[in-house]
Image 1 (cartoon, rainbow, N blue to C red):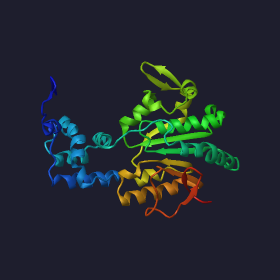
Image 2 (image 1 turned 30 degrees about the vertical axis):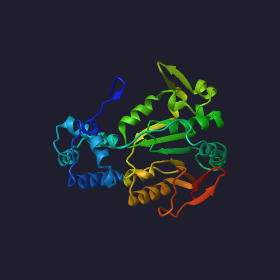
Image 3 (image 1 turned 45 degrees about the vertical axis):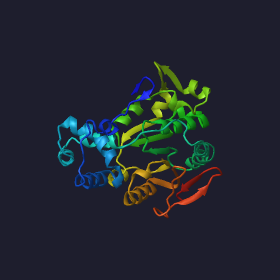
Image 4 (image 1 turned 120 degrees about the vertical axis):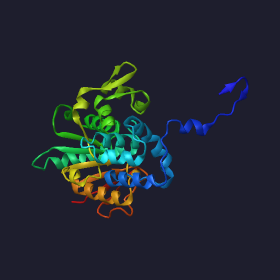
Length: 297
C-alpha cells in the first residue's frame, strides 16, 4: 500500500497463499492424472500453483482437507455435479465477438456459400455448424450472425443448425442468457450492434432470432462415445482449445471430429494451431488470408 510518498513492502507470498489449500508433490500427479483421464486436459509440472488456486475454493466448500480426498469425492459423486464444478474451475473462458476476422470472412464468403450450394443436392438441406469449446457463446453467436447476414432466410427457417458445446456447465448457462458487456462486443460495427442486440442495463442482450439458432449443450471432448453421436457436420470451429489437451487426447479428439464431419466438411483451428503430428487425414487448404482443414470428398 502507499503511505505518503513511500512504498511500504507487502508480503506478496502471504497474500497469494491466503486461503489456498497446499497441494503436495505426491498429490500433484494424482490430481493431474485424474483430470487427464477424465477430460484430456493436461497440466505440466509448473502449473501446480494454478491448480491450487483454482481448486482450493472447491476443497474449502466441501470440507476436504487434501486433494486426495477431493478426487475421491468426485469419483464417488454419482450426480457428477462436482466433476462439472471442477471442470469449470480449471478451464479458462476468455473470448470476444468476431474474433480472428480473416477466418470469419473466409467462412462467410467462401465456405458457407459452398455448403449452401452442396446442401441443395442432398436429401436434407440442413446445414450444421459446430462450435467446439464455445465458452460463453461469443463464437457460435458470431457464426450465427454472419450466417444470417449472408443468408437472411436462415433467421426464420430451420435450415441452419448451430451447435455449441463446452465442458463447463456454468459458462453454458451464461451463453444461453446471451448477455454481454461492451468489451466483448468491441469488434461489432454499430449497425451489427443495433441490429442484433438490445440494451439490458449496463449490458447488451442478443436478440431472440439469433438465440434460437444456437443450441448449447455440455460435452466433454474426451468422451468418445458422446462424440460419436455428432454426425453430418459441415463446419467445425475448434479454435484455441487444443493447447489445453495432451498429445494422445488431441489425436483422439481430432480423429473423432474427422468422423463427425460430412465428406467435404471443414475444420477451423486457431490461427497459430496446426494438425502437424496429430492427423494426416485432412487436406490443408489456403483461403488467402487464412488456412482451413478440409475433409475431402
